[in-house]
Image (cartoon, rainbow, N blue to C red; front, side, top):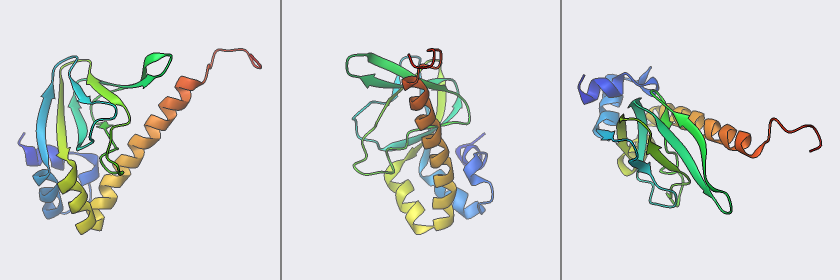
Length: 153
């Protein structure tokens, strides 16, 4: 499968025209990560948005006094990274490959420009981004709750 076909197969391309998908493909590249490689580092410049094609990625957060906490482990058809969209464009979490991982990597600057230029593309990508944000918030919420503690403990 070539890069254009990989982009076309993503959820956010459903309902987009071939030209719109070509624009998205122009922002994309295919990247692979070995186990232990980082896709994102907390506080680093956020310049890439990833869609996992295969493999497994852990989303982790360094918490003062607690060390590194794994918030979520994600796999194929899931997005990694949202900070590329929100200034100051700094990563809020670490993301590292647990298994050999293949991704579609979208360069943030041209993707943001395309989203501004074509609101239909922007809306399609934002639906994916909001889904990712919702998952991260839910994972953080579950991390801070002790679901097994007795009431009032």
